[in-house]
Length: 112
Image (cartoon, rainbow, N blue to C red):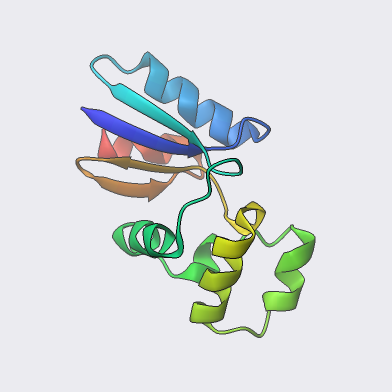
């Protein structure tokens, strides 16, 4: 099974999710450090949609730039996250079975 994790190595939840994926037999893993290789607006929108979420659901509220988006609509929030990927909650994981925002990390099991 192929799996892609949109990873931030400084995030404990992202590291925990990566460890689960690495321990899973038969997983062909791609690790994308999304702060270095941010998803495009289209890719971000696709992942959020496949996860069954809305942009506001994946806005990292603790980041300073998030406060300015409190009154923004979903589209504006999505654009802001595409421009400044630190605003994207992590980690996102995609497999053949779907996409999940793995918070908590055990959510990865839903798509393995």
